[in-house]
Length: 252
Image (cartoon, rainbow, N blue to C red):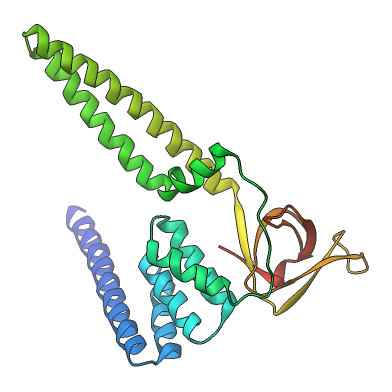
């Protein structure tokens, strides 16, 4: 029985290793094809990695670059957004997304943001909830070490220093934990999508015969609010709300 268990573990580990090796080889192959200007072939190589359930910000970033080179607006924006969802601090993806959005036909102004919203967007949201979780774990270790130093040191000056710094570290731990939880909740509850059809008629109601509210074009990002049958209720960054067919958008 132990032998069978050992063989099963060995088989699983070897399979994972082969998948990782295959993904790395495909990634290098895609990079080489991209350098040679073979963007369609590079996309095929990167897509094979996705089929192995190996995702990363770098992979989506490279896919975005390939589609951008082919002037495919919606797929390029979609993949840049996917890259930023995994790594919000990826400055290359942020910059390339700006260039890709310039290819879109829709010019939608965002609603004015409060000071707190701008602070959240410019600083807090630059890290994913996983990164904030790592920061939380780091502060927990620092807090524990500082408290132990405070507990074991006998000098009054050092005890005072370690106590003060441990309290500060604890406060930072609680803050980072709260931010991590909020970022996680926001990530799970916020559903965003990219319009993939060249032109989409957005309706006032989720019916084919409803009045047209406005028109959207490929590459526009929308916030998905609700779903009724094969219709999605969406909101734009300027506050406009309407309904469109689900197959017109792709959620990221």
